[in-house]
Image (cartoon, rainbow, N blue to C red; front, side, top):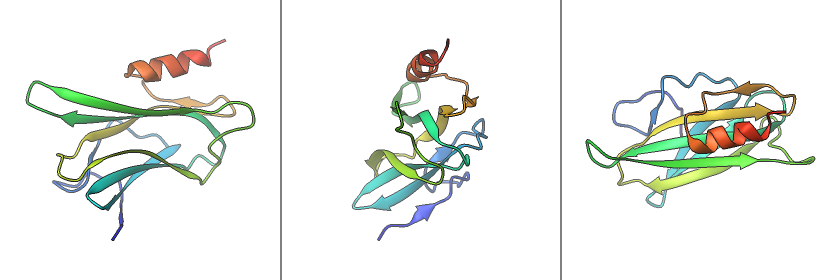
Length: 130
């Protein structure tokens, strides 16, 4: 059975959502089933989205993290239309919940959001600089 969980901070349930992520453009949800957690991103901006970067930081040990970065860049007439969703990543349900955050978003009208802390975020943001 699959069910959606809102990305609010739940103690011990789902993944941790970074408190620094207040973006109004890309909302994240998780779906659980078949021993996997599926991360889904939905464009809530009201406008087409042409690029995004989402990071999931998995704590391995007290000193070691493993970061998975999920991104997409659309070109031409291709985009993530307003209201549409996309599967961006997955992990096993037996793993501790990662800290998930939106690193970068760019809309078709040039509006951007994010701190670009990942290398992928920095690279994708740089593609759009004139």
